[in-house]
Image (tube, rainbow, N blue to C red; front, side, top):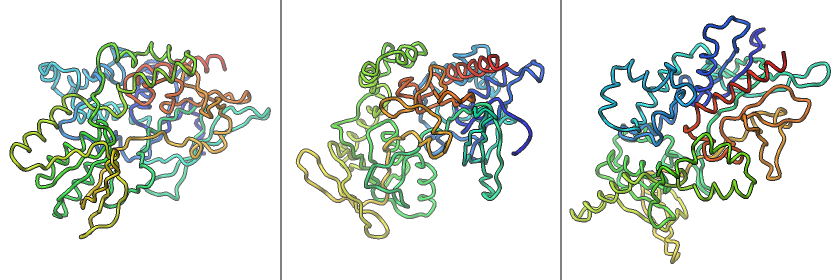
Length: 436
């Protein structure tokens, strides 16, 4: 054991979701006697707070309102809000003068870092969780979990913490399509900026870059590479005929309301699936209309000028990748309607192919066997985000993410991060009162 302390909650991963929960705990504890406070610890394998750092493009903006920050929907008077951050930075009036609800992504990341620094005493950075083991009492009931982590700077050093509950918020992992592999010249867009900077630093010429994907990240990647490598041709490859605009209209956006989670959670499985199908255009494989229009205007200007650096290979897919000349790639692209193939010599291929939930089984080990599954072999989760377990389990497992099948489209998004933190916090307090 790392110490004799038994925690009320240990968070695995410290992105925005568990950051929001840590703030809820911090605000709950303020002014309370020691025996009334929640003892929380959050374990993060990164050496410092970071959220999609590889895509912090200088002019990219958030796709959710700043009011859907870490706290406002839970506690509008909180001094952990984005507006309080702006006030402290001396930018509140300047931001308001922009007349926008959507901050720069890098500014929102700065806000997250500011909030994370204020609760740093709850966080152990450089701590990679390697095991979660159930702890049983003399009657065989699982009353606690032992969470073992290793120091990323010294992998041989491990420490084990005991807790009554865990909150799993490991985020998503990059998805690489079958048949493709990441390599020196094949990147996932999650590493776009550092990999592009490294390549530029070598001085090696970039003559052609290929981007696979049709969503917001793919379009942003195309735009970024086009601006970063002014002598390169940038080819966007996707199976659609054209980019699909994101539906951010007021009625469609109600699918992200907290009340919509209640509706989704209580709906039959067929209705859940229909809601996902109906509203995929709010989030999946869609692009902001402003960016679509900007890319189209760019390609038209280049046609007029007679130097086309921006190309869109629609209704197409990457069929094969082979080593090319001078350390580059030969990328075979198939035009799906005819099956015609062309080989593009390229210097880099960027896979803007999305993300997928991480495998909890590998992390949880024996603890995963305590979780109940539904007919589709997905983990059963209660409305309070607590995993349903076999009867002898009294300790709690909360999921922040990976619950789209139970809680809908907001599962992996920022839209309800503050509300979800409130729901988990309340559940923790209710469980502790019941146990007492």
